[in-house]
Each structure stands twice: as structure tokens, then as C-alpha cells.
Length: 357
Image (cartoon, rainbow, N blue to C red; front, side, top):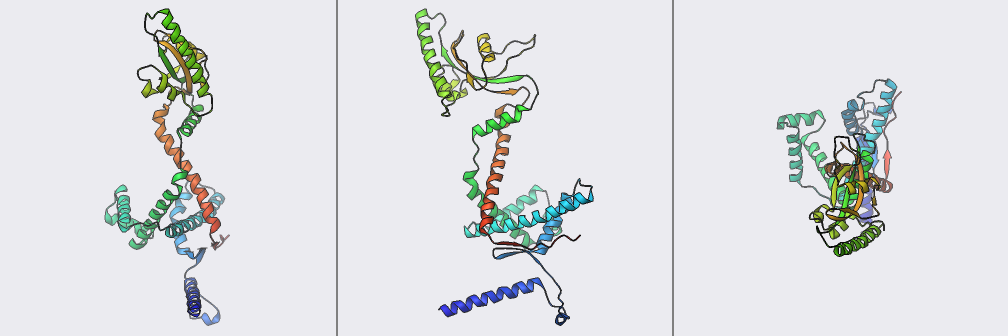
């Protein structure tokens, strides 16, 4: 059995050598004079797979014109093309590495899924079947090679979703921090503040003794809420407002009073009760006003959550786009790290010929 295994291994090695030799060149009629005609060239070896010059050249040519758009200087064009050569080869190597991992982990794509992806691309670009096939030919694809490319891309996407899924997490805290950075340099109007409050109701014409008891309760709540919000344990004022505020809609709004500015033109009226507005002007962002605020409705604990320039989108409306941006950034970061790990374990030899002067 050992002898048979050795013979089989030797035979496989010989076959590989013969195939590589055939890929690299064929002998001309003057072969005996030591000459040969190169019909194909290997530009990279990725573990046990190769990247051919013709495949690399096809991808490079497809990107070359776009890469040079807007560049006038010849030296700058040459520099950009040299960078593009390496970028294209590295992308092809990375695709092979990912495909190798996908096959190892048995990440599969069905023929129906490939059909659906091709049909979706055709519909997206509003092409007839004939126009789509012509577009394939212009890019150097046959039906078979195009299907193979689509299958490989789908397999790669499925693999990345599986291995990076837990690494692409964006919290609301991240979103709000990004929003604050985004609007810092925007100067589209006066500053506005997002105000929240906890309301302790005091009935109209309540006896002085009852009002005194309600004030004592509100003072104790102010002390408790302040300690919890400032504790650093990620207890939000909104969650406490939902729990303690006696305002009718607090359980849904988290005690939000909306956005309010503190400076008004002569013909404008203040948007909050005078006492609340006075407290707002004296409270920094992220802080709770240190005393109770009295209004006809009762006692209020006031909190200033964040600020913005008026005229910019409020956070809730900007949030979907912010999520897309942050998730894309998180994915790119995770993908870059994942590729570094894969490359470390791989055996890659690049053989792209130098640029002729």
C-alpha cells in the first residue's frame, strides 16, 4: 500500500510539472536551436492555484480607462497605471484565497441562485438577453466563464456574511457620536438643544401640605436620577423618564420635549415655559439641571441631551444613512483584518513582469 501511494504521488507531481510546462510555452520548429514561443504566462501562484497573464490583462484593461480619468500629466498616468497593475493582481489573489476558504468551509451556491443573480443584473441594467450576451463578450466572458465568475462572487459574499457577521455591529451610541461629529462643522442656523424632562404632577389648587409632600418626593427623585445618569453605568435619562415621569406620553417619548433654541428674534416667542427655558440656558449638554423646575403642571427634572445647528436633519431622520455609513466602515475594517489573517497563512508568489521603461 505504501509503494502504491508513493507511485501515485510521484505520478501526480509529474503530471503537474507537465501541465505547468504546457501552460508556459510551446516549442517552435526551431526548438532544437533553444528557442521557444510563450503562449501563456503565470503572474501569480496562490497556494496550489495559478493566476494567468491573460486573465490579469483582461481585468486590467477593463479598469485602465476609468483609472486614468482626470489625469493629464504623463508621469502621473504612468504612476497610476503601475499602482493599478498591483491592485488588480492583489484583488485576483484575494478572490482566490477567499474562494479557497469558501470551498474548505463548504460554502456552496446553487445553479438557481446563479441564474437569479444573472437575471437580476440583466434587469437592473435594462438589457435584453442579446444585449447582455454582447456585454459579456465585450468584457471577455463566455456564458460559461461568466457563470463561473458569478458563482465565485456569490460564494465569496456568503462566506463573508458568515465569518464577519458578528464583527459588524453598530450601536446607537456609535450612531449618535457620528451624528454629533457630522453636525459640528455645520453652521446652518442658531444652536438647538434636545431637551428631556421627568414631570411630577401637582394638581391645580392642591393644598400646601400636598404640594410640600410632592416637592419632597420630586427632590428625592432628582437626587436619585442624577446619581444614576452620572454613574457611568449606561443608564439613560430617557429610560428613567419612561419609568418615573407622570407626563401622559413619557412612556413612549422618554420624556422628550423636542429641540429648542435659546436665542429668539424680537418677533419670536419662547418655545418652552419661561422657567424651563431659564433652566435650559443654564444647563450644559449632557447635564441635568441641579434644581427642580416649577410650572403650572408640576415639578420638572430637566436634562439637556445634545445640541445641533438648526437647519440640519434631526438624528431620527439622518439615522438610516448614518447606519449605512457606519456599517460599511465596520465591514471594511473587519474585511481588511480578515484578509490579513488569510494572507498570513497562504503561500503566494507574484510573478508580474516589471513595467518596461
